[in-house]
Length: 362
Ligand SMILES: *[C@@H]1O[C@H](CO)[C@@H](O)[C@H](O)[C@H]1NC(C)=O
Ligand SMILES: CC(=O)N[C@H]1CO[C@H](CO)[C@@H](O)[C@@H]1O
Image (cartoon, rainbow, N blue to C red):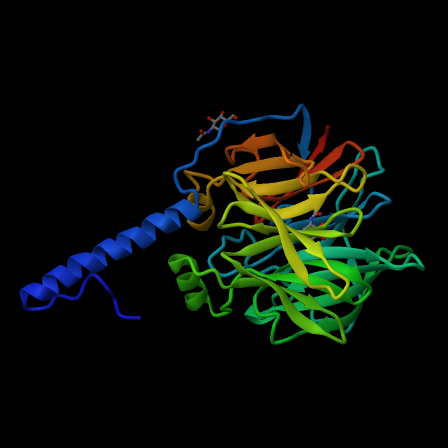
């Protein structure tokens, strides 16, 4: 792309063009600042019984809790343009048993034959099969690529057995997955481009080229498109609806799932924050979201001006008047850059992109 706005032509017409392109650039920048919610500051909301989780220092991008209270946490994501406190350490999957009085974070062992050195986990999703086998789907970015890794969780020795690596031309820049079978899932591509410079341009220009893809061994297809940046994805307890968070459009899309796995939009709920990962309370159907109140602070990390955290709960999203409640908010002094919030029987886990994780009793 030509460097607009700095090119000086010798004639008068050129100067007019220049000021017009300058205005266009300013308009693009203003739109970008809106998408990043760059001016938003937040008032804190504290919860009485919270503590930081020991052993999670470098992010907990995604959390998925099984119906029996075992929480899987992906940690250690390294992503172009996003801060990391542990640039040289491979990522890991952490397990917490929320039934314990004082749940501890334990790193899961991963079976041999899987390249641990380049493990860079992002979104995760679990699937419990009819025979009670627990499958864990993990979005991975080894060497800046996108793959989905399928593991089997073996409870007896707290380990993950790697079953296969899924790669596909339609899975270009995967952020999150939601499993819908033992080897099928929906995935969000947060960008169209996977090259960092083009990805940045895509965000800068506000292109809506991000999409959602359905994957099964037999069929792979795009099922929704037109997002600024589709991030978190999850499914309603009755498995009829798929929820998709568009982080730069500040909204949650409710999509109906059809027998052929296609999705059609039912509604869109607008919020004033950058919505990252969505989790669904299996008992109530409430949606819990880890949000970035101000994306500018997240993308341009400044220790003097920390990225904040915010957790929202949405009740009755299908009704005429869904209820949105701010459950937790912090200016970054405790928790920076919350990306996910997940509940299990009165316990709340809040994860972050590159910082720590918080455990609260509600
Ligand atoms: C952040 O919030 C804490 C308490 O909630 C407060 O003590 C601190 O001054 C705030 N920091 C900034 C930079 O506003
Ligand atoms: C906490 C939580 O549930 N996070 C969700 C993030 O996205 C993945 C994939 O959709 C879900 O499985 C997780 O549940």
